[in-house]
Length: 145
Image 1: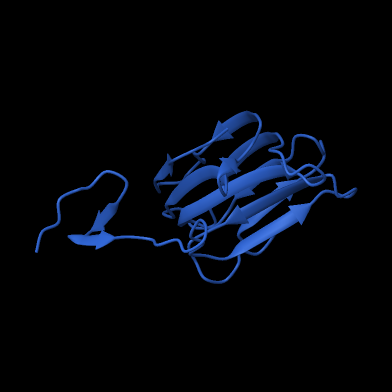
Image 2 (image 1 turned 90 degrees about the horizontal axis):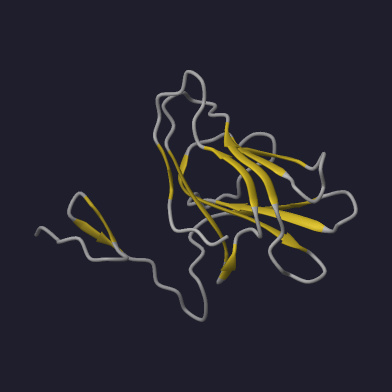
């Protein structure tokens, strides 16, 4: 049976894909959070794989500028969710840059900036979802900044 596109829902090969949330927002995948040295800013990345993404294998975070961390996604995934938050107040924090460094030249990336029901970041300095020699596809999906 062919399913027509319904706003807010995805169809894959004619199948309707629905995520149900019970008591909150659905979390279909693994999540990993990293804090800068003083524990002031926390960056979280989540994806659609069940196992949490691995720091320095699937993603990198550079806290050289602690109030504007740089986030780099390495492993392709169609369910990346990225956020930066001030630990003490739980309000969105800045992201200095969000970029890709694909480990496989044909990986695809879909990225959402969001933190539950809150914005994924206060400000984003730069966003670069391309890479030299990479032939995959990237998109910035539903975002809240």
